Image (cartoon, rainbow, N blue to C red; front, side, top):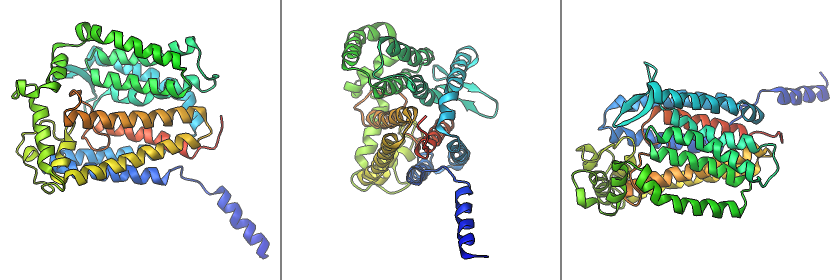
Length: 372
């Protein structure tokens, strides 16, 4: 065979070989966070394998879903987002009708082999829906388009709010607003929205918040006023964080978590376990991985040629930061306790699967070259 024909055949094979649409920096950071989460979860669960095994199953399934999702082009997600969004609204409606209740809230659907929390799915589909709405529209958006985007965001927010789940509803609303902001929201609308929020705050305090929600806010400023009741969570988490010092007490040696003083140690308050056992150094390492992940998502948003991709990736970067800040602020006692898990670290099947689904979409955006 002539050398020229041989070279052409090799080059042709390279062009036709299937490409796995994965962003290696993003994948590496996700795997690092997942590994850190499993390590901390083992200790937070009292060195019992029950939660660890379940989390590993969800992680394996979620990673497989992420890889599959990444193979679909961005235009597929832009066109089919309305289907996922509508399905999410229907699931939220089912929660109100036949949902499973726990701790005074009705947030789950029991499928027999697993409980699904549809509000977790809306963390992804709401910003995607707003991004799809603005994909082929001129920016900045006019008043009518702003109102439509707020309606798309407000619908699922209200359905989650009545479960009740104030924390998740506010975070989902913010994710939609982030996408609207990135679409080129004018300053006058932002000023008007901020003004309305200030005016609505006292009304929400009186008529919207329930007694236990108001108590959480009041406890934030003086947890010792009810040290054995509403202030218990904050006091114990602050004790765990402070006792960890610079390098911590060592893996599995935390007293607050191992002796069951720390509530919800494997879910919402898992960062306190990390702080107690690995100290400030461990927390800073985890924060560094989070910041690198957010930075990578921001780079993906900046480099993608698709308007839909820019809005989805940009809003996900901002939302991801807010989730981390709210969880850590809640555990540290500078924000009210609202029940927000720490991404990739807290135990939770639906949350983990939704996160990895979203990162599959990010992988698709990162490897997309289509401007449409």
